Image (cartoon, rainbow, N blue to C red; front, side):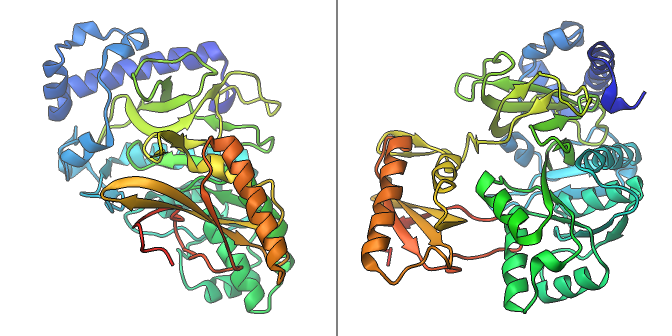
Length: 432
């Protein structure tokens, strides 16, 4: 039977088997975990199966960064065929290595995610993720090829050429970040194209959160069906979870990954259905295995059956990150809360920015910069003032805080070919 349709009992047995193999391999071959588990007083006999996983310590991003570049290796470097890494914008990058088997598993996982979304052998898929150390480009590339789709490995950037080839090749599937898909649509219109006249029917979007407003705008511009998928370099890359055609959460590939939800403050495991921080343990990884990796992503697990018939539990959509939460005047704020409010205003675009205003090293205030749509922009100061006050009032109701709101002209906020930057910090007095 196809792995996406195994019974819950079959999934549990497979997870149990692979978890034991992973722990045994780590105890034998990973110098990093040998030392870490010894420091925590954990011996191989203590971990008999998944029922004991709570005894294992968490692995954090800082742990991986501290082992740069090859400290997480559990195999000879001669067996590692490829390296990928995070951007490292806040310090040393996080490196991920892959054996031949790891690469095969990765391609299989991504091909299944693509198939869930609706990609077929008849499709022409244009990859507009960056190639290189970032896992997105190569991850989707080999998964789509394994599925049998035709791949156009364009990478990001050079939007005019992207659009020209997309039209010439009759591309049917777009692979990119959501923000770049919107940027490409804007550029298409400026170049005289109608995005809806292209042959795109499906979008595979990942690499950053995507609000309902952003998804709706992408679909309206391109006339395609937008699907979301999830992955991260530290665990594998794309291919951990993805939407099926029902789009009611992202199916986890539970034969390859074991998921837990914890309270981000206490580290205590939460019951299924409760929202908290996602923790992942890859069950087959050879080169750079990790145990109980704290992703920082806030979500919940969904056990209810999906109409598509796939039996894997689903992840709800990421509502924020434990490390992108900001505290302003004692109030915890996630960007996703702001997005939810802005999505109720047809006058604003999906582009916004949270500006944290610091004074003497402390966050003193928050300004929400909101970009208007061309239709929402008005010459009437009174109308804009009323809209600004409505947004501020609704934000105050949702956030329990009344932030400053600044309406921005259409297309005035920075666009990006990669992940969008939602939060910036300035010193008081630096704002225009």
